[in-house]
Image (cartoon, rainbow, N blue to C red; front, side, top):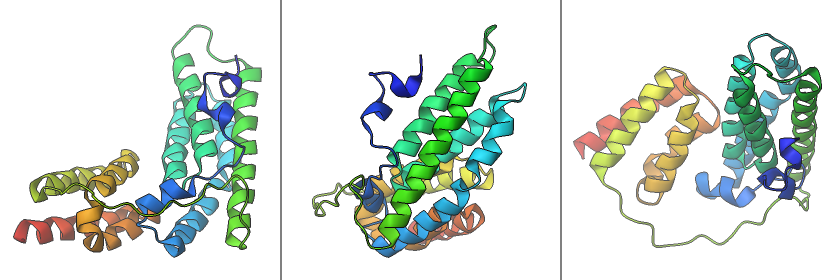
Length: 224
């Protein structure tokens, strides 16, 4: 069965190329200009995705394809590209399920995955470029009013999470994207003004600069 056409899968209910601007801006502290900067970097990253993925899908070892899809899934959610993120998630799971099995995936399955990802990349690119031009595409979610009442954070917990993020960044581990998102959710309200430089580094996918910012923040919060 085609996972993207499975009624139980979220991708079926998402419009092609849809963007959850509200979720992305929540991570970015409501900064529209920063979202556009991040999204433009993201567009440059996914521009070559179909060409990079194609040979991986026809390799004997599909693990590289699964890793690439996992990476793009994380980056997609950072900018709110929910359809592409879901497409990559479902494709990654399908490939991982097939790795190591006797049957694996046949040529038709692999071609379908490549086509689905390519079509989602194209639709996502159109949506973001339309948004950059000042249009409001129907598949871009509205931005809700900011909410108050965020829980207070513990400096000790924040330092521990920063150390974890720093370690992942040093290893160029894409799990850093998810850890950073959670860090912003947990501490953004109380440490918002002090996390700006780290946010900009991660949203630009500049892991080296992110390591530097983590170190500075660890020292800053340890001294306070």
